[in-house]
Amino acid sequence: MANNHGNTPAAWTAVSVAMLGFLVGSIALMLSPINMTVFWVGIALGAVALPLFLVMAKLGFHGDPH
Picture 1 (cartoon, rainbow, N blue to C red):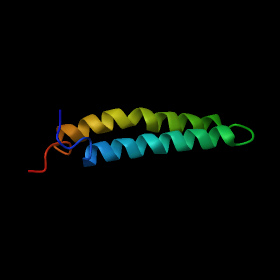
Picture 2 (picture 1 turned 180 degrees about the horizontal axis):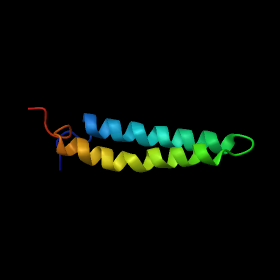
Picture 3 (picture 1 turned 45 degrees about the vertical axis):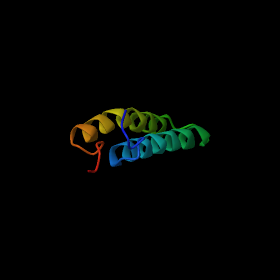
Picture 4 (picture 1 turned 180 degrees about the vertical axis):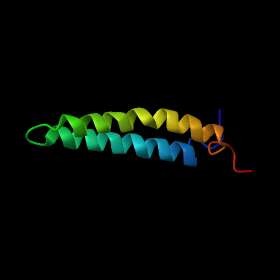
């Protein structure tokens, strides 16, 4: 297990993108009428978060800073 407990640029970026996706999707569902295009954009942002994290981790943004 990492000593950084997820406090890395890769983790913060992935969580931020996922939260943005949930925000966009939930705003789309609150519109009247519901905007399904914006909803699916939010779903896509949420789905991109995990691959983004994996790519950033492979690039070294999830390791120990020492």
